[in-house]
Image 1: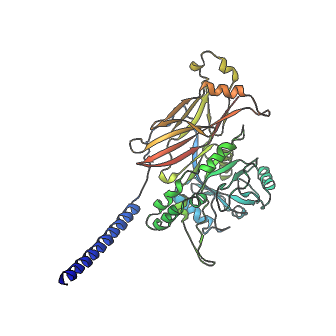
Image 2: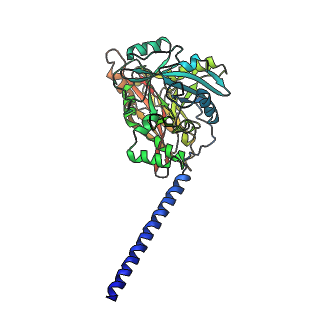
Image 3: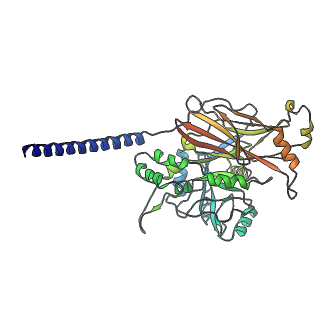
Length: 434
């Protein structure tokens, strides 16, 4: 009996110690998890080197596009959001309150220090939400055709909003006439995450907002497929990054919380426009220049939370001329018959580069042709001579319904942080046609 009592005592002791060990292991795990999250940081190291020698001298501005203020369902005033943009060193910002242009009508547009602010409008149509940039008069919600016609009459930029947002998706992918697509939309990015990642965002947000926000940087594959298929001859559909920030999450009928903060969302992704002239400081002129660049695809977009891009360029050289994103290159069929074409200046050569330090961050520049990746350059600038066979296929395939055959080229830049890979930057397309 004494032995049985002793054995029971040992069993209880072992069970108790086992429980202590499990509890200690759990505490250590939570502590390590907290430390990892608290000090988590991913930053790209950039070199201070010159850009490509042949690169046009363009003036680049980084902008925050599509956010909501107290004029609709956002929690921040326009003035407070402009102050945030100043702190984050944005060059311009464009609001997009629902079905109203009241910020403009109230006279809020203009320069605030070095930041240019002007208002756009997010408009409801039967197919989904439509973003109007650069309009002067408010447009009422209505049919897609009527809204689009109104935007065009005002020489604005018509952009399809969050096409694959499960909450408010775009419902007709065969429409025509629009200018661009929101490729990155942060509201769609978090709605498209798995429940596990959404839970991680909620659990880690208070510890380290950067860690929580970095989950938004995944690649929107469905939207990119739509974007690639939508390209048409001399009708390039512009891709942009939109914040779609509200900072106004409804908890109950009366209670809302400011989550995530505007300052955090404004840091995640930006659209970078390329201007042919230095900004004048006159807000009307500079606003028109930004609108023109957006409409013509003279822009690229990136996840600036990992670092504002330095030295990025993307262009095509042909017949001693340079073409940048948004351009259409008219290839001369007669060039195919030149015997020494490989030695001629009329070679079609694609160039792309960025000043990322490969010793700190492995990066890959990927070249896409009509939506398919055809070439990559690791840790180095990309130089790609378009194959004669590809040019021949464009020329010999002939027009379709009177429209020339076209090829569309764009680049993406992937950056590696150890084992983690992020598609960091997306260019717009350049078209080659005969």
